[in-house]
Image 1: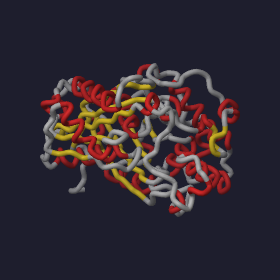
Image 2: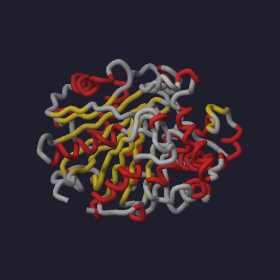
Image 3: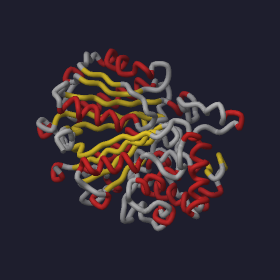
Length: 385
C-alpha cells in the first residue's frame, strides 16, 4: 500500500525505570530516567532528539510533551500528547513512524512515567462514571470490566476458573522476570478465593497498582542499522474506538480490537498464525480473553477454554504477556507502553529465562478507557521486512 508505514521506522532504544515502587520520585523523574536509558542504549543524547511523544499523569498531563522537553533541554520539531487512555503509546508509535517517514523529524522519543503507587496507593482513572451509572456507586473502572466479564460468562459459558487461569499464566511468566513486581506461587483457587472487588472479578483478576516508566527511541528504517542494538521494525498498526462510556458499548463481548487488529495485520501482510509472541493490555483477566478472540487467535466465545488449556502460559502454543503483564509485572496506570518494551526485548532475544525461542514477530495491543480505545502494533525483526 502506498499509504502504508510498514517497515518505515524502527525502535532502536527501549528501557524501563522505577518499576514496582519508587518512593520519593515524581512521575517526571521516572520518565526522565527511562528516557535517558533508552537514548543511552541507542548511543544518542537528548540533543539528537527532535520529536517528543508522551504522557504523564496528574496536573501536567495535558502539557507532558512540553514539560519533558523543557526539563531535558530538547527543542522538538514535533510534539504529540494525545490521550486515549492506556492505549495511547501505541498511537505514538504510529505518529512517530509517519513523521519519520515524511521527514518531519529524525529521532523520536516516546516516554511515560507514573508514581501512582507511592503517590496514591490506588488505581487512578482520568475517566469518571457516566451520570446514569454514578447513582449505583460503581467501583471505577473495575465494575465496567466486571459487566463485560459477566456478559461473556452468560453468553458463552465462560467460567471464573477460566478467567483465573489468565492471572495464573501471567504469574508464571512473572516468576521468570526479575523485574516483575509480584512473584511467587499463584493457583486458580488463590485467584478465586482472593478478595472480591466487583463480581465476578477478585483482586487477583485486577491489575497491579505500581510505579513505573518506560521509553522508546524511534528512527527511520534508513538509519535503523546504524545503532548498537538490533532494530525492531513497526510492520503494522491501526487504532479503533467504539465508545467512551461502557453503557454506550453496543456489545460488551466485542471490542474494537477486531477492527484495529484486522487493519494492522493487513498493513503488515500477516495473519495471527504468523505471530510468535503476544503482549496484551491485561488490566483485568477478561481483557486477555476478549482480545485473543477479537484479534483472531481463537473464535469468539472460545477464549475461556483457550486460556484454560495452558496455551498462553510458559510452554504453551501462544506466549502471551511474557513479562507478567499488568496482572503481575507492572501497572502504573497506563500499561500500553510496557507491551511495546517487552515486545522489543523478545524480538531482540533479551528475555532471559522467559525468552520465546526464535521470536521474530510480536503483536502488542493497547486498551484505553473501559474497552473504549483499541490500538494494535505489529513489530518484527529485520528478517520480516
